[in-house]
Image 1 (cartoon, one colour):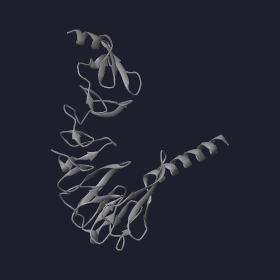
Image 2 (cartoon, rainbow, N blue to C red):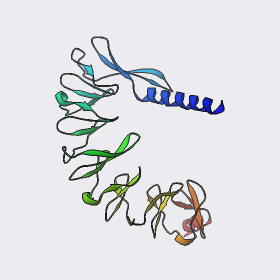
Image 3 (tube, rainbow, N blue to C red):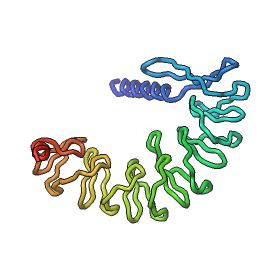
Image 4 (cartoon, one colour):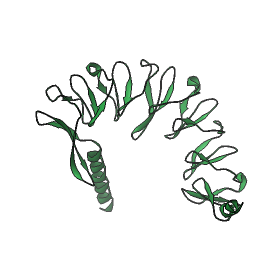
Length: 237
């Protein structure tokens, strides 16, 4: 019985979250509006700037178009070829020339080979024959032949670790462990917290206390910053 109640509560929470994310397009014949629900303010209506009500149609619950323009929810997306507009998975869509993440063009290097490798809620890793991507970020210095997404937050190639699309300096792709303990990660020589390098850490004595805090023999860390006596000594200097 208890398990059933928990499942019901979880289902309601997910449903409400979905309602707060996606809405619907409505029109009064003159204006087009995006209708959606929020926890804080209830039902809201946002006017689509410059939308032509006579030619407007919904592509889905978060993407629309009129004869000339495309809209992500209520926001105008510039430069889209509306005749070839196609929704992918939220919030990704495309036309014949490019992919778009929300309102931003991705400027994909090779449309024919582009594919999403892994989704992270509203974000994603992707690649094509020429480039790798994290959302709209073109990943610089990547070796496509050896590029692999290892987890939601990080990927590797033969030479690098990429954290949320950026090269993680000093990280060794052969020994790197993401979410090693809590939000801390490590390789054979270095330790990070959510992509931030812990400086002046004693690697051998480092112990993770919980998701966001840890210590070594010289003192404590809050996230990636040293706190306590060691931090006070640094201020005195």
